[in-house]
Length: 315
Image (cartoon, rainbow, N blue to C red; front, side, top):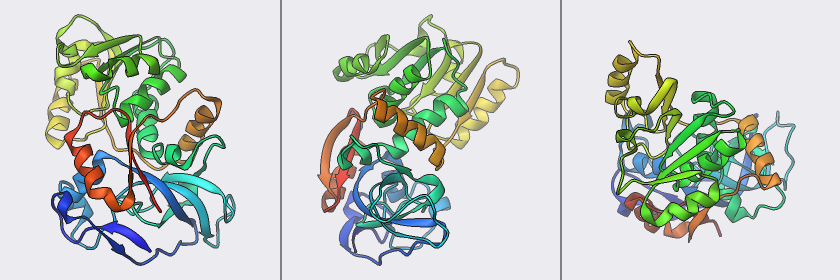
């Protein structure tokens, strides 16, 4: 199969496009003919070697987590899916594997693509939408009527988070983003929008039940004063130093913090699919690249500030 891959950690220049072995699904996995995926910050952070203690030094590595396509083969124990089904999910390899013509998904982590979604739209969904849902609901324990602030509200995760917070019944949603993306964040459902270039949300007098830092640009210590009693701070960018500092800060506080990375969950993705099917949420796509141009797509993502998702189409 054709795939994007790299044989050493480094800049986007280490990415190549060429022949790689086609994976074989295990008994509880499905093989997907990939039609689309997307670029997430975790992809280029792994490629740069930021997580090498976890990802190791076995090469070549195929980057990418998001998979959208058709089932090409099924493992012996698979019962939910049939060959030809349109499915999406996060690649079974926890650090990549999606940027290729074929990838494997665990049966329990895959979901059917909503009928009205194109492959391009579906490729933008899994990791970002799962991160938003799990951050707000599982870790942030969002309750109906809560005042929620979403930092990085126009990004891949943030654009889903604004919509999902509304779907979960948030009482007031404040989105933090750059000046060029304020109108987008309003159209997604934010009641208030803060331009982060002009205003630091941690220094004003507003208070929130939940601060969801989808951009990984703040910290519990900095955001603590913005939280109401029993308020929760959640970030998608685990940082060992910040975790230690935050743990100390929560020791004598009625406020809490959570740091997490999205986990595969077919049930969570099924809920997201239902919202997509109903038109409650929608993916926001900034730009689309061919898979062979992955290096250019990674470079654009690394610059930051792009609204929505950068999507990859697989020929």
